Image (cartoon, rainbow, N blue to C red):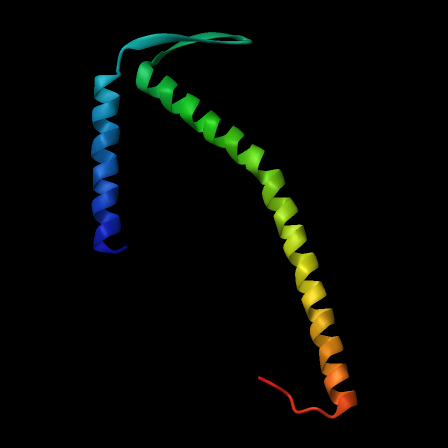
Length: 97
């Protein structure tokens, strides 16, 4: 771990600790099967994590689609390069590159 990473980690820990201390008020967290009392900071962190996971799921479909398109285009490039090589060899032209 480099120095910048260590400094960033220390800053994040300090911010997280102060956030927890400033938001330690207990709040009731109700869900489908009951409810529980949690510190506000913990409830906010849970909400943030759920939001990140839902956002990742929303982007996952796009990423998979782009990966498939990339693989398809790589196959097209390979086929085009193979065809170009065959054309050059049949025409006895000097290879470029």
